[in-house]
Length: 329
Image (cartoon, rainbow, N blue to C red):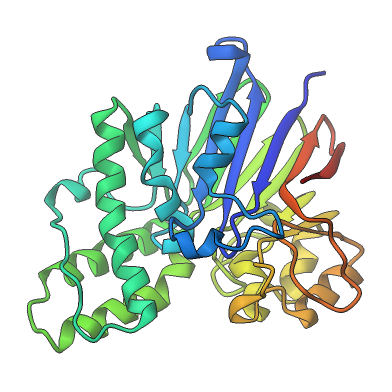
C-alpha cells in the first residue's frame, strides 16, 4: 500500500504544511497540496540555527513541480503571507479559503496605517496579501473554493478532506466583518475594526479533517478550544492532531483532548516560544493523554532537546499506521 506524506515545514512562528498523496492521474503520480505558508518576513528567517526555512525555498529544494491545491486556513501574516509568491512558480489548480470566491475582486489595496502597532501592521499586510494571492491564483488558471462546515472533497484515491469549521453562519459573519472593514472611512474607527477582526480571526479558521485509508488527521489552523467547541465529538477524533494556536494555553483543554484522543500531536511553536507558544501546561496535558509530542521548530523548554531540523515528516499508511521523523540539517 502506498503511503501519504505529511510535512510540517519549520517556518519559525507560523505554519506551512505540504501533503503528498499517491495519485497516478496527477503529474508525477502525486497529488500535492499545501496548507498555509508561514511568514514572508525576512526577520523570521534571519537566524536559521534551528533549521528555519521559508516555505517556497523548502519546496524548491524538494524539487516540487506542481501544486494541485493551495489552502489558506485564515488571514494572518504567519499563515498566509508566505504563500503569496508561490503561484508565480507553482500556479495552484485550486485555492481553498474561507471567504466568498469573488470577494477579492472588489477589494482595494489598503494604505499603511499611521501610528500602527506591530500587530496592526502584520494584519494589514495579510489583508492586502490575501487579495494579491487570490488574484495571482486566478491569473494562473486556479479555481477559488470557499470552505465552511459540511464541505468535503476526495481529491485523490484513499484521501477524504472534510471542513469542520467555520460553520456557514460564522463564514457569513466573517465575510460581513471583512466587507465592513473596507467600508470604514473614519480614521479613528478603522484601526479599532482592524484590531477587532485581527483578534477574532483565529476562530474563523478552516478546521480540516483529513482521512487517508483510515488514518485521521485534524488540522484546525489557529482555531483554539473555543473555536472547536461547536464541532461534534465524533468528528474531532483523530490519530494525528496539529494543536491549534501554536500550542498557546488556549489551544486545547482536557475536554477537547479527550474528544480527539490523538496518538501524535504536532505543535507549530517557534524556537523562541513567541507569544507563550508551546505552553508547558498544555504540553503536559497532551503528554499525560498518552500522545507523542512533535514540533515543527525547536522550542526552548526544560528537558526538550530537539535536533535542528527543516521539517517534521509523517509517513502515513492504512488503518491508523504512521511513523514520523525530523529532517535534520
